[in-house]
Length: 370
Image (cartoon, rainbow, N blue to C red; front, side, top):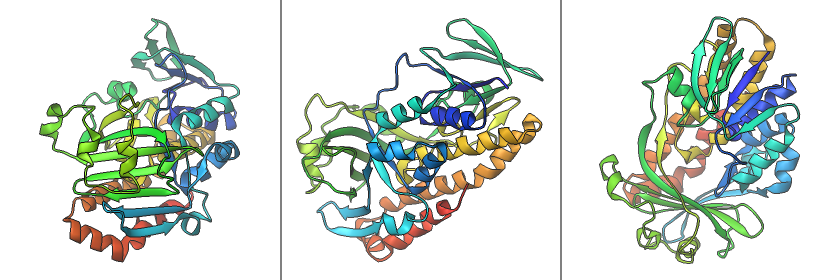
């Protein structure tokens, strides 16, 4: 079977490895000319680690990652609101880990044995046929495939070809992400909540920490906001342990800015083309499940393809196994985002009293196997 994967991020690389484990040798195209730069970090909950184990790469990931044994939420003055000991919760499933995004890309890419990776090429046109998909690439080459898998992210070109009217929607937050020196000696996943804004820091190497900073802002205000404003001013009023990471940030730091969006589709496939990961079901990062859901998608789709049958039946089986799970994650992301916008005394009181219970409620379904 000739299979094309579009997208060389975590979803696409995981898809390629999952297919290799089932005896396939897919073609993967990635529009960027080189290996993807990874200027941000990545937090992997236990279910993501379990899926990486199923791909055969968990050992390499653990060697490159930092273990995350606690997840703490503080108020903006540094007072602890809630803490979860991740080993206790995720123990039967897998470890919680953090690492630079580029490190996971490299591990997944180097794990591939029979996949043909073509970089610097994108998809222009997909023509569906009864037996094959005819794909025209940006280099003007045309090839036919039995299946096309769109793993090309929230702005998926494959999705635009299949469902031109579907588009992501803004969730009400913008964010900045960067990696910097861990001068605050952060240990574990540490978040601080202010009024309509959040700071989060997670060690990703022995010396560096990944920082995520978000701000609630209306969609109408987006055009008025600079992508590189003074973070010191926005997060003024936050204290130790995280504000110093903003305060000491070099002027030329590599900041990644984005408006956070989500995507809900009724259907993830059409004909012989199917979507996985953010291309099918992007959500806000509140659950840190983007990578986990994408890798789980890859494993389930590879299994349903290996089981054989008509293409529509294969894709139906894939969606039936995945849709409820990713919709749960999206629902929890929306609920967590909404809770953070409650009046500060109410929000802080809820987290003090019920923080661990809310964590357990959100993540317990993900302890179950895929």
